[in-house]
Image 1 (spheres, helix red, strand yellow):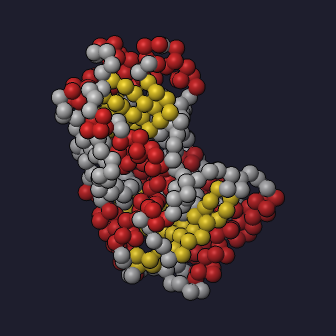
Image 2 (cartoon, helix red, strand yellow; image 1 turned 90 degrees about the vertical axis):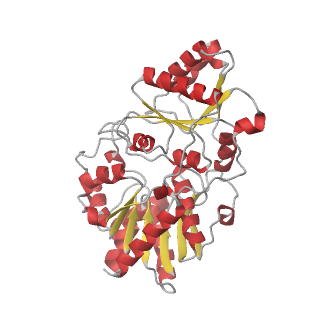
Image 3 (cartoon, helix red, strand yellow; image 1 turned 180 degrees about the vertical axis):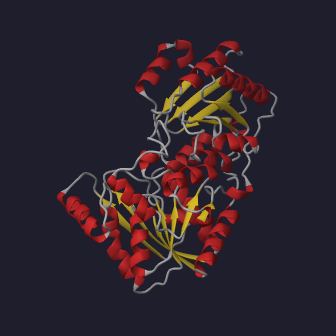
Length: 413
């Protein structure tokens, strides 16, 4: 049995992309049967969370502790931030979660031996570094996005060659202490290696877990038996994402296609100016529905009622998108055809070239987006939409084997 202490501020309740990724990993490890996992996560009391139990996600853990967060900057948070500087030799916004988690960890360590500590997102990495240096635990750091956040590629951040601040230098120094680093893609690994200066020998690629198709989610065409191509964008479309090239191309598709042959649903956040643009054109507005974000499982049910899912990424610099969007793995999970609109040279174009994604256009090229929409409509009308496919490296068995391999390697350090 492989015993893991998982420190993941965003895991349960399942309230966003990071939590979705982590809960799927937990399910894969639990279903394998060779892992025993203790979890410390966070519950934000200022927000409304779904009432689903861990069991409803197929997760059965040995120990679970949720650190309650009331939100806002209080005197208690200030005290804990100062305490972090004394305990961990570093302090930054949000580090108080680590201070609250440490006593729980110390209690669990009295009764449990862990093969390794697995950290997910900030500020858990300072606990990983502390537990390794002070208590001799093996530490595996998993990064779903670049960290520190200022090292995000442009326009999200200042890029991988950004000169770190004093606090960021301390954060990077702590991050380097990990025995192994896990990244969801080679693009993100290469991006973070540029400033972490860690050897490839302690890096592992483990994409987000994608389970087999859930038969509860049937293709919309089989449910409604209509000839309307229903496209959905599920996720954040706020800056720095720019949906206008796609919306303009979609408008061209409306004008050049039989009336009523397509429809677009935008699920989630969109900038007010983009919403106003859509509403200002009556013909365009009648073909687009804008729907507020819904709870994760509801979003999958809504997704299943559409024929095509598209994802629009921001125009990232430094050679294309380094991100593996959570939504892409959701789309793959129910074999939904995917249209990725992304910078060239990124993770999504790589998946397109591998034929895991059926359709792709460069975010810069409206003409390319329009032509791909025309191709999608043609394929839909001929019953030949290209479904997404789950790469073997994304399947639970592959991910689980990666963690088993890491546990084996750590046991020999």
